[in-house]
Length: 304
Ligand SMILES: Nc1nc2c(ncn2[C@@H]2O[C@H](COP(=O)(O)OP(=O)(O)OP(=O)(O)O)[C@@H](O)[C@H]2O)c(=O)[nH]1
Ligand SMILES: [Mg+2]
Image (tube, rainbow, N blue to C red; front, side):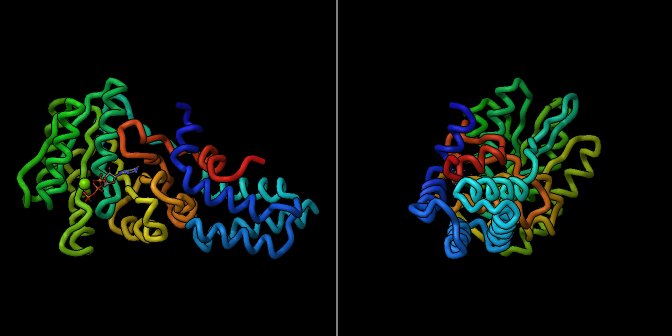
């Protein structure tokens, strides 16, 4: 399946909502008046594009209509498409450097898909012939360690783990040194999404991050924030909170297939400083794709 088909299938629910809503608003007249533009703005907000981003998109549509005098459906679509792309920014990929240790640290609140993404990334890099290692730094729940070990067995990848309740930073210390001595290309670290409270979680993440940077100063270290599209505007808040605790290289937006809230990618891009690098479009291993703003927008809007 091509990337466009993957996105289009993955985004069926959001596309159903946005594209059908758009077509319904546009039906009949073939041109846009102020009421219809207001309806369109409400539609974007309902699709979780976020109030700020929706306003910005509709401002640019109004501006485009004023400038060109063209209030046709195609003109509105053209301006929406352009502004959405502007908000999402250039396509940015998760780059793996050659001949050095790459460390990917997956962070995010519980249930967003960190462990699943760790498994999917592991499979991706194994498929590219890289030497991969997993680290179970979510020591809060026994099931979390087992879940990563299942991915390790499935992909024939070593998993560095300690017992439940052990210090996650110590797991990272072990993992980094094991990865250096075994000349691993990609070390993927899974972390906890829930601790006793939010401050604990943020403190732990910054400790983990410090240990990783201290122990592997010459490696390429990238923390990825995993956010769940189905949580809507909460994902936007998470992007803010985590960015305050550690240096976030980029974001993974998961479960785009799971709801009509896929528009949240635009809301997140509007607020966050780091780009969306990857998208989760389903539960199986091949459902992790590079996030492509153009294809994303094309999958969201009706064809002009
Ligand atoms: N539909 C869909 N489900 C996903 C996707 N990514 C993850 N999931 C599912 O989401 C659930 C939670 O995923 P996990 O990977 O366990 O999430 P986590 O962030 O590790 O959760 P904690 O360890 O509890 O913090 C699982 O049932 C996954 O199969 C996705 O892109 N699409
Ligand atoms: Mg997990």
